Length: 314
Image 1 (cartoon, rainbow, N blue to C red):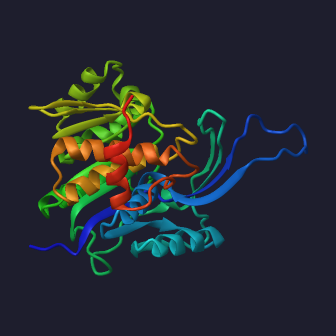
Image 2: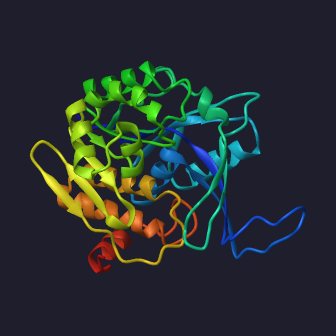
Image 3: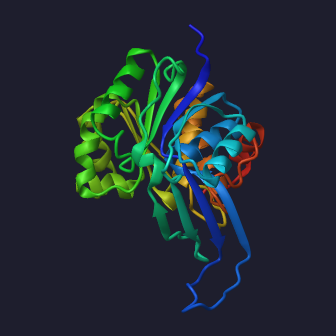
């Protein structure tokens, strides 16, 4: 049966305020100059849904914003890119989740985060919008979704599977305790896609293959660990694929993981083979690192395919 959306992207939506390059914060009330400043819709759901939309798939965004000026920017920006925002809630008296990122010359991104609306978000009622009327259901932002984390997320992923969706997942802000939230989700996740750093923190293991096996043993069907300049590691019961990173000049690493998620989702929507999907996701992640913000470098699907076939790997 034909689904209404290619993908539903539910979870953490954040307004990012980014400036670069920032070597240090001026002392006292002093002034320093930077070369670039951007406002973007970001977060483990927001960055992913924008990239998916730019790459040409139909998207339903599901999340929460506050009742402030930041909310207006988030919703209008999503709609500008063609994201269906009927799955959003505007919460009175609560600020929109936001982050200030001071991007260092080497691309690192120390952050100051206002948790805001995402802590108060629950999925919309079925009468408002059918969030499972999609081919790929992505839950992004586990760990910073206070009301959603836990049994609500288990139920969401379980219902997505029952409705015939491919389930994809990512998190943010992992600690050793986050594994308690994540473990019950594992049997309902088709593509588990955290960074190696966050996955390692949660399971206490360090070798990528050991880390991947831990989550496969926990019930995920496919584990994809993003490893920055080392590329990515894919593991399932049958396959192991190492995809090298592309040789690019890194400007800002904000949103690289979210862009990888988007690339994998697009690969699944377009029925790419596994190796091509992983290479495409590596391309989207690499392109984002070439500019400021979580959607930098991504133009459209054809441009990304061209870069996938022309960029040199490390």
